Length: 338
Image (cartoon, rainbow, N blue to C red; front, side, top):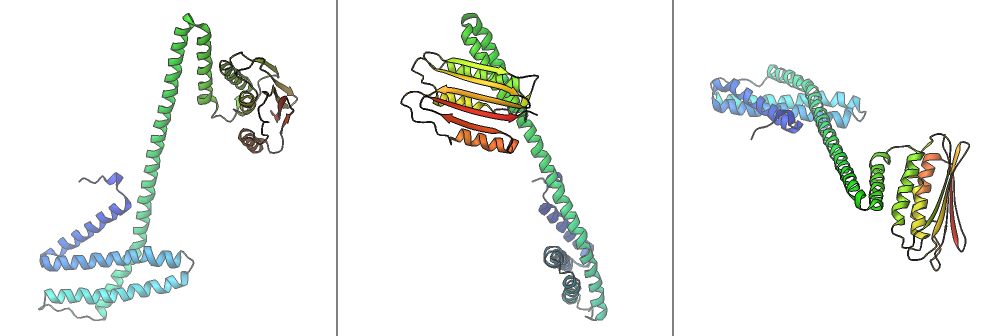
């Protein structure tokens, strides 16, 4: 199995490093015999690992990083010295076992030598820690880039699919226009609504004219579900091209078709008024209530969610109220447009 170093994890890289140290030590001492070289390589590799990981995984995080600097400065050298004494005794014991005619004494000079070597490895542990952190951060950065690229690819796919549908609907529109112009018009409205959802609704602000066009398309599509039709009065009066958050007015129109229309009866009607008053925009809907239906809840989920959204958008700079009588229901919204 091939290991891709570019995609190797920090743990895999550490295994490679220690395998390299083990083999390097083994082949360095191989002229003295394979048995001695193997034992010496294992002892020293383990010793290096204990010193390095003992510092970066135990002493440093549990003492120094927790503000126990004095304790760290006192305990770390003492631990290195004690470990160096044990390492010196074990190493010399192995040497004397393999070379009984070349006995090495366990004296102060050997202890000082192993202590110095252990202190050097101890200092190198900080470099080792930095290297591990570097590879870990580098790997995380590469993963984030991969995720970003994947997200961008998925975004492109998600954009291609709706636009393919739009183009298909347009083709159906032109085919239907020759045989059933009214059906073609409805297909065109549906295409506009879907394009609004994809292109406009993710934006923070949309042109008021765009929002009005969306409402008109929605009303036209809902009208085809009403057997005897509905009388709609949509009054509009505003100046310039103000912008508002998308889907802000939709809740009121949805409520009309949900609660204010009897789909099987005649005489359905409602009015919508959109007026600019200085720096404010008012939106009012008024519809009748079907006979026998229960009263509309003033705390419906749609209005509750809308009010939460308005608070996030405008704080206390808006008005939202509903009024219900026995035969009619009116909703009123006033928002700033500056």
